[in-house]
Length: 346
Length: 262
Image (spheres, helix red, strand yellow):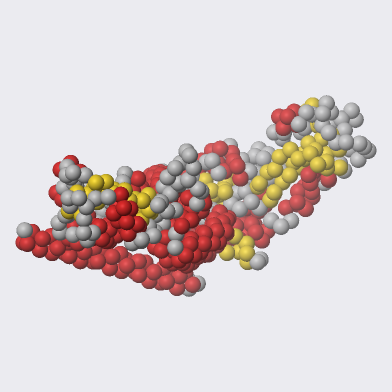
């Protein structure tokens, strides 16, 4: 009964096609941006940092395209569960790349600041007129700002529809890209004002932003791969699907007590339900029927094993109190939302 | 239990409120930056505001003092120096014309190529010349190259009478002593010699010189020099002023070079 990218509903398939097109076009547009900035880098540290950030922006779309391609491969003897987790791996790769480069850029810019390297910007000849090269750099940066913001907005919808975290992180980064461009422009205007440090400071600001993104997404990717209970795509709260599955299952007449554990496998959800049934109610047929019912709840539900038990051991339940031990973003809000904590027992 | 839940949701609301506050403050900050940016551009648009500016005010100081300090390193035909006479050469002429345009005097300082470039960082030298290649200037911290005002291609020239392939293999090539091309000629398989005689059919040198001497430049390229002058790092206004001048006055460098040789 397992599902994959090939058995998604028509709406999601359409969104996937759209997302692939978007990312394909985006890679081409990004290439033009990277080229434009490359020719305008000059001696500015902020420009160099912005350029590397743009270069880095290739990783998420490529990870998405490759990931969603592999995800479509059929399960085989070596990988009987298919390749649905590739999406999580692609997300981790994008996030780690982001964080690593963030650190590199901060170190590089700080060295420029400490060594008091002074960026010198001379002239350029454009159509027979001699102008300050800084204007060319600012022009290139302005161009690098407009397109990502547009594409960021366009990618947001398919990312939510597909519950694709790589695509979502990519869209968020693109939308935030205008700040990078602006910081670069302020840095260059600073050089023009004779403030040699403005450029390196702007570069550090950009690098901090990159590092922040990398840190946030690496954390989310690692938690996904550590079988965290599923969370919404913006990582703000637990996925409402958990409650829906729980309620639907509890409503079955033969269920006396149950424990639900879900985890994310790429864009899909898989999990186990431990169940204590009322006496003489249990048969293979009712379990089959229950599983089929749960899988129709949402296209993301991929694989749910129903495990009948005589009694549910204390060790199998997640105690509501341990929630504070988990250093994760947005936990307090989630707790307020679900005051009993994460105790999905009946 | 109820109380606890209440407190919890209250504190989370308060936290959310604080978060909203942060977001508002951040967006305020960015709108301020945008306003600042617009204000800057408007200021820059005015003519009486000097933009770009020098962190160390080189241009201002030169104009105020009516004098600029120029370090030169011997490197004919760009800079030639004979004992007590003032320096001569193509770059020296350019600098004199530049000083005339600024209406300032020149304080010449004769230094080695490296100390000329290093002197820029300390700020006691305003401009350094010496037929510098861009690659000589970039590694020196504290020195910044101007744009490349002249590209010089060093090639192998053959006597017009030579025929057949121009392969250097086992052939004698005349390399003038002041050119660091010996190694490159050897790498290409040629045998560098120090004298130009009838036994030698090939010579290494800049393409313009080979042509002036009546040699036929071959396809064999040895080196490319990108000629620049050097200023103190970071002094964008001073560099802009120099480059404006150089862009106007260096269109005929090759003609001047030929003139000097003939």
